[in-house]
Amino acid sequence: MPARAAQAVVLGGLGLLLAVAVLVYPSMFGPEQQTVVGWVENDAHVALLVVAAVLGVLRFRGVRLDVV
Image 1: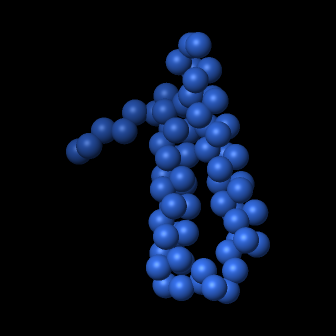
Image 2: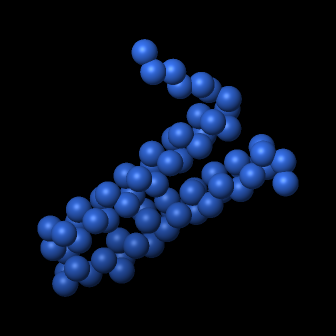
């Protein structure tokens, strides 16, 4: 599989995971799981998915990030 196609597959998977995290998971996150640890864990996982998606899109578009 060419690298560009593999990147597109990964981005599609990340998009699907983000959709589930935003649209499906909150309805399953009941009051008994809504502790401080539960909220932090949920927010941390969603934040990591967003970071991965942003970096994946930048890579797919060919943007190079340089540290100054």
